[in-house]
Length: 149
Image (cartoon, rainbow, N blue to C red):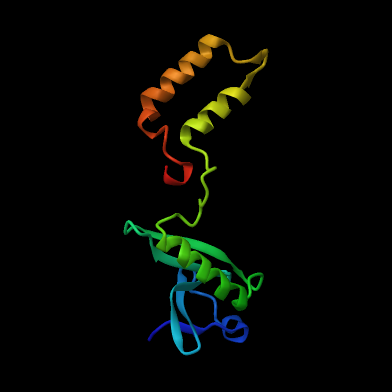
């Protein structure tokens, strides 16, 4: 199979840079088998980045960047891939696992609390204008989590 490389430090370190303006993508194999979804992307500047590409339960693809080589070792990648695969099988997003994630409405409320003018805090009239504009343009997205927007 084209563009496969063994998941070892020596094999990854020996990979060449991609052509200028391009990015090479390699499938990674361990113990003679390709690890499904695990990729190594090599940029034209020589940066080598581990990522996993999986389909969530609802069918949409999601790429999660694990980290850069050599900061992330092949041993660490193997452990992380298992955790990510379990999360995706449950139908959850890799980026936002947790019920404490903010919604767009939460972000807007925080914005109103922290927004200041030269004279202090916002006037009630200005707050009403902001709320009206927010509900007009983003009302349907208010309950969406930030990772979904």
